[in-house]
Image 1: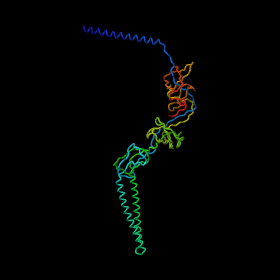
Image 2: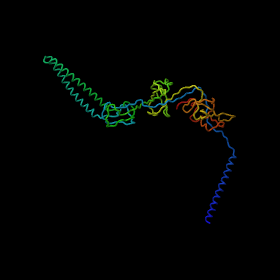
Image 3: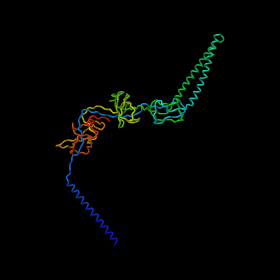
Image 4: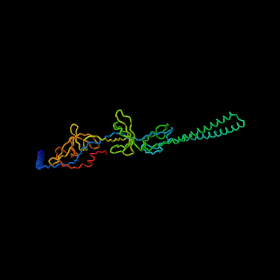
Length: 387
C-alpha cells in the first residue's frame, strides 16, 4: 500500500509539471504571434562620409631600418701594468670627462720615484765633483803641471756625469707621468657599459678595464638604395621613426661602397641625445618621393578586401532622393601611415564611407553625414604626413 501511494504521488507531480510547460508554451506563442503582427520599421542607418578628390601626384613614403649606436665607444686600459687598487664605477654609471674611473696600487710607483730621486741626487753630486776636477786640471795644464791627456780625461768624466744627471731627470719625469697614468680617467662624457676587472687584479699594460659609450650623441647606419643615396649630403636634416616617436637626425656621411647582397649604400646619421632612442634600438629613415599617378587618398578603415587581390570601398549615392550604399572596386597604389592611395571606379566627389564598411551592404539605405570621424580631415587624406 505504501509503495502504491508513492507511485501515485510521483505521477501527480509529473502531470502538474507538464501542465505548467504547456501553459507557458501557449503564452509564449501568443506573444511571438502578437509581435509578428506589429509592423517593422526600416530606418536608414547613419554613416560618416568624406568627399574624396582625385590628384595627379602623390608622395610615396618608404622606411629604411637602421640600428642606433653611440658616436664613440672606448675600451679603457692602463698604460702600465700593476695591481688594480680599486675600480670606482660600475655598469650603468654615468661619468663626466676627466672623471677618475679606476686606480692602480701606487706603492711600487712611489718606491721607484724615491729610488730615481736618490740616484739623481748622487749623479748631481758626481757631476759637480767632475766639473770641479775638470777646472783644476785646466789650471794645472795652464801652469804646465798636467798633461793634455789628463785634461781630456777630466772633460770626458764631467760630460758623462752631466749626461747621467739628464737621463735620471727624464726617468723621474716619466715616473711622474706614470703616477698620473695610474689613475684611469674618462676621455669623454658617457656611461659605463662593461666592467672587465675588479680591485686586486693584476693587469698588464693595455689590458681592458672598462668600456665607455659616449652620451652626448648617437649614430645610426641605414642602408638605402643606390638610386636615392646621391640625394643625401653631409649636413642634411632627415626624419627618423623610433617606435611611435619622431626623431630628427643629421647626415654625417654616405658610404661609397655598395653592398653586393642588398645593393644598398650606407648612410651614417648623427642623432642628438634624446630619450626616444638608446643604443641598440631600431630606427627607420623616412624618405618621401613625389610620384606621378592619378588617384585618391583613403583611410585604411574605409577599405574592405575584395576579389582577386582587389579591394573595395563603399560610397553613398543619392537615388530618388534617398541615400544608398554603393560598392566601388579600387586598387592600392601606395601606402603611407594610416591611409592608402588608390585608383579604380571611384569618381571625383564621391562620398566615401570612412569607417566600418562591414556594417553595410550595397543597396542599403543610409543617412549620409558629411563629417569625417574624429582624427580624420580632408587635409590629412589629401596630404599625408608621417606622425
